[in-house]
Image (cartoon, rainbow, N blue to C red; front, side, top):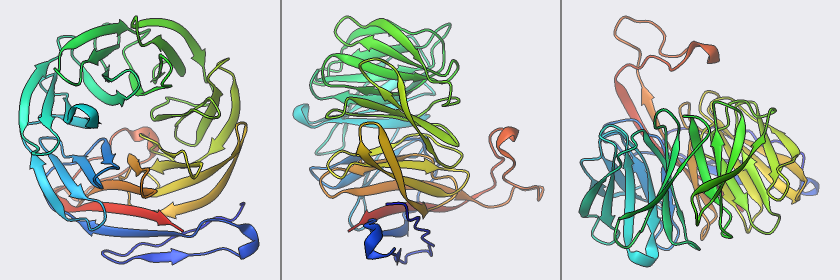
Length: 350
């Protein structure tokens, strides 16, 4: 499982590369379709039951058929959209809107907006659905400290809030047993929150993971994986101890986890690739592939029914004055010219 796969992409073409049979490494392929539309993106969410993928586009959310890349619908009026969470049980979806600090509640079947929910703490950003608790959880860059806010997915009512240790929460994930884990980018820690009381239990330092963003949880191994540029970490969810580190690219945001295949997907938006990692056992992880994708693809999602990974990346032309639209990692967000491509990517393996 030590073989590295380097997959080259061309628009609208699927390419594959393979290792020796002795390596027993998965065979990966990547397809890429320009779905059009305006706006960049943040999070992307798959609905395994239907094969649909929800792609945030700043002012609207596009709904795409994952199998074909065909656009199925569009949810408008989502200013500063970050991501969507899908509560299939209640037939409701929720979108975080950072610009006006609201959450758009919509019907999953018709895609029609039901209402917009004001979130008074501000800084609305990340979002996830905890199926066991049956709650939508928001991760907010509110001031003076960050917050988690819980919503009832049936009614959209706010049911609770937790104050965090600083104002830089990023990815959030639940363990299905009453705990929520949130990466705090400003302190290189994982904050542990009691989901029922919405109170902070403890903080765990993860110094090897600088400015943690994406986060996933694996129930059978009771492990948390926090994503960072260059180095991601695996944490024992019982003790908070870092049990493994993983080398990956730069520009990491939301991670993907396929629990059946035991495969972790770490996107690197600056490097334009995805590091694919196999969980050999709870404390040992092997990089099985480095898959070439698209510069700017920093978040992804896994359809656990088809084991397909989806990503969206907006491609920009040069800025008006001819200066480079990218720079070194320490230079901050790159300058952007006009949008010239809206790439919907699917990563599949055999």
